[in-house]
Image 1 (cartoon, rainbow, N blue to C red):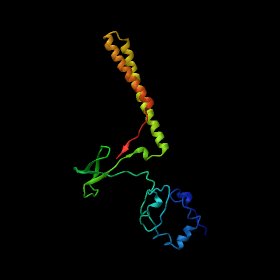
Image 2: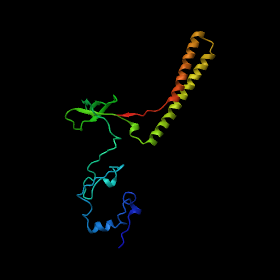
Image 3: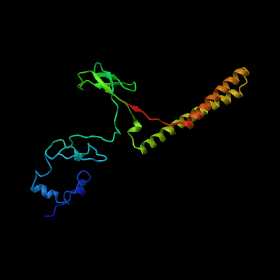
Image 4: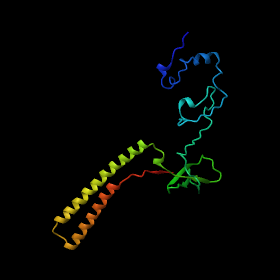
Length: 200
């Protein structure tokens, strides 16, 4: 009889591969071991998700992906810096390349006690549209904070200029200091460009 396509009820984990339409399912019923087992294939692609369901295990239960090699260099991290680990009660403590204290699991096997560390800027890891969105959100929050600070400085300057008490010279000096702070804040708003974080 005609094989019924399971794609309508089990999409997307099954229906992406049209095995019923191409009669591959019928073929495998007749020859169940003719499914590629024992064959190693190298694939050069622009992007593969090793965690995809269809790439986890073979028909006989073995790992489907033997190795993944990224030849783009986009995720490369220089780990030539070596640091000594310090044994703590429940973890191994090391100093990351950025200066952060990192806690490593004691279950990780490393007889030498020496660890290679590196760092990567977050914007080296994200696509351009994500970077633009993050920068826009950060700039919005920064502008809101700076506007509040600017308003507070303007209130201080206004209150100081309208006050009668205090020496004229000291008052002028304090007012000028506040105006300098205000000018610096306005400069920061114009030059602000969120650089992103750096990950160890």
